[in-house]
Image (cartoon, rainbow, N blue to C red; front, side, top):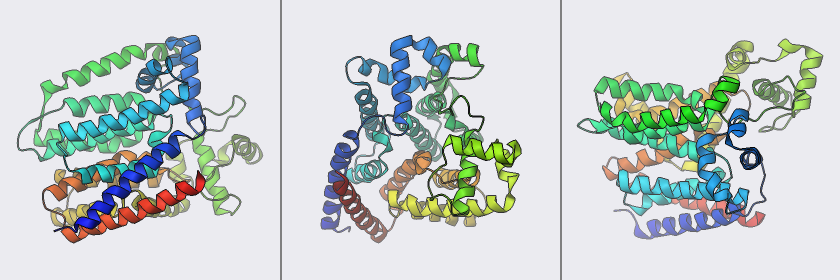
Length: 403
């Protein structure tokens, strides 16, 4: 039996951490980081209308949620408040749809939420991540059921994520793997895709101004200044060159002007313009950065998940060694490993762990499900609670010193 005082301290610590995080992040000055982009997009809608904003490029699903609140509240408050509501929606999904009734699961979720912080910034990260979390968790649930299941939640969440962030392209390997497993095992009822299909049609219609003007879907864009010809791939690649030369601190980028100046001095071909070019531009550097980024994900991912990340990956390795193939029963662990490898490979500078938010939260759900099925040793569960409690205290200390 798990030690009750340890569980009680774990619960109190994570809830206190959540309350402190809500105060800390929501009271931050507005317009920091990517939040400024969404404030500008919202202002463009208010000033020039939806059609002009969509032509310029915005995250339509996120702005649809934010716009009504922005008519009543300050724009930055509306942006952040929507993300708080989205957390409430995710909690309801787990409670009502997936029947996760034990508070310990939500304590783990609150710990992650409090640690990463980006859920409480005024960006579309929360909507994108939560939609993909539901997609991943639904995939695992569909694959492990004994009969054909509804694809309504599965398809709807994927459709909304697709129109929310262009980053969805990077998740294509996992999405295709999910579709492959579901088709192979004949687990889904195709008629349940009517609602997801309707959502796709709706957002295609809403994207018409962008499709006409730009021949592409509308996404939020962090574009360089008008006079700059460099792109994000080149800026990130140049950042890693500078880090490797000791001219830039790790986890930083040169500004656009510095990147442009490097291209002007060394020529347009001195930096790769696309991700495929970057992968083969310097193969030795690509391999080196892959292993370095993968180790970074493992170490700092554990700061956000405690022992869960290691446990989930060990479960995958154990099953893979046994079956000698990718098994649908360990879809979420496979997704975690796949996305860690993908981001470790394609990102030449530092990997932002928020990109891995969908698979990390799905890993928490997968871990909890294994606990419910009695497949995780009690000693390991208890050890994870102790680790999470200590990390919560560490996180709270860091926040208190900055308030």
